[in-house]
Image (cartoon, rainbow, N blue to C red; front, side, top):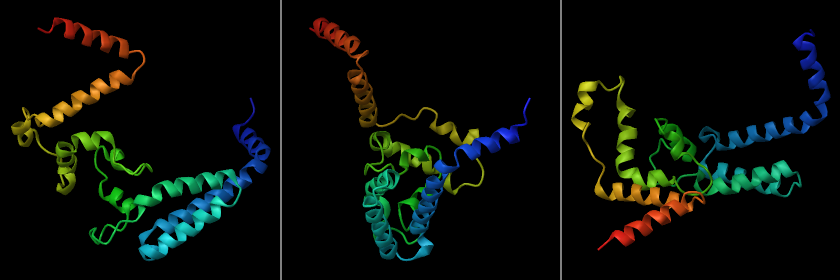
Length: 191
């Protein structure tokens, strides 16, 4: 049996040429991260640097850099927050850090200018629940939560959830015929 270190060393030697461009891409990503860091200048300066880098990469001809430039263009719209936002939140990345609570992945930037379907439909009751542990040092005790055990979401939210379930079934090729047959039965049974 050969030693794993020797196999690893031979494997790394075999891909050395392919790794060189990747090292360059890693450096470029570090430069992007530095541009996004609020401590590295004002919003306007950072926005200009990000825009310059995006144009530079878009015109580079390197497929990986062009793809990075496309991604940067997608999240550029919501990256830097306006002056009306609280002073401790400088950009959407800082806003994400502020929301590091359960289900935080639904609030993260994904380049499509919206927070997500679930947050839009259930946000009125979901947001207070997700933000509840924010100011607490210790977890909630069972006695504190007993009063909420029979709580119901508002009627509008329940209807929105039901519509979403129906629409998901209607989009599915395999479940659509079953849904249509169910509607047909309900229609024929109606007075």
